[in-house]
Image 1: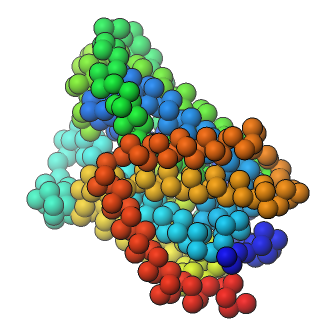
Image 2: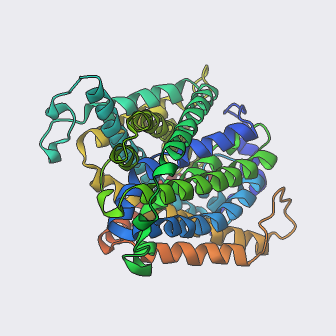
Image 3: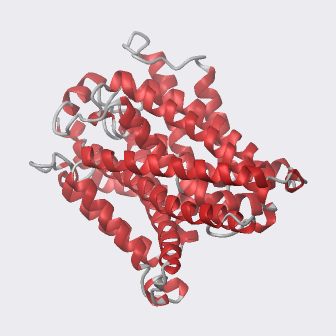
Length: 455
């Protein structure tokens, strides 16, 4: 199997993109991506339809799977500090074809994550507009499948995010940091206002759908955790990636897991879980207990939170394109860096337009279901990669070493595989079809244009 050596990859990557992100910036990028749709949207749906009050256990199970994977990611991110995340790690360990497969997977994961969050952002934004007396025509707030023409807010926010990312990653990280501070403050407001209204009776029955419901809930809310993967795509723009990448990945995951569990316990304590199948469960629950100011603040925080998720997910998407193009597996235009902004500006704008169209015309349930299986597959591949690299190159310098080897990556593979098995069959079939298309594209184009084969 043809593969790129780590030394060659590092030499090729030490150019082009600006190194401007600190460990704090990377941690905030992770929080910006992880705290968003999961906490403001999916908690209600998952509690009402999958796990009930035991959704807190679903977050624990998802966090365990992510925790094992995060430790694996941290080792590879510090050893191979380049753009591309799981794609790059797979390229330098398992070879070109497995790397293409996981890169094709990441394209689906990030694009659909962006479209899903943009549609959710639109829902909260429209609610805020209604609060100040502005109502947009239904034709401009729903796609064709829902009886409208286009979801204009979802379309517009994706274009704005793309413009911001094209201007520069440093500006993006500053905007993300401000948004993260705002939404953490809003979560604090929710907890402060809601805790006095907790009724322990609402936690009964605690596990109404059984253990299978807990795992189904974990499979659904796993969407919330994909943000730390996006942190690893920023390695080539980190000031000190060997030190800062593990800090950003692990710290953001730990902090966000604690917040998710706290919010879930309080949310299901102030409202019966069966009532939470709404678009804005946190604001809804606060209204039910008379905390109208906190509910309004939560809506503002949701808009801010989902905005930061869009920033980081879109950032990750363009960096995967950049890395694959630099290796010749995608056209060279995807890795062109703007001479002034030092970002892949044209790729960012073109990708943003395509995702904006998807968010504008597709219903949310059509774009959300495939995100989780793609993420879980990426985690499995990275875990396999670190096991292989430890065996193939045991003396390779590793600034961060995954503890409890080889059990940590093995547990990551098993736990992620278990969550994949808990997903609906139709989701798995759609994923298989997408990957089959990717194999065709590889042999029809990518393999013949590969930089390794041109050398």
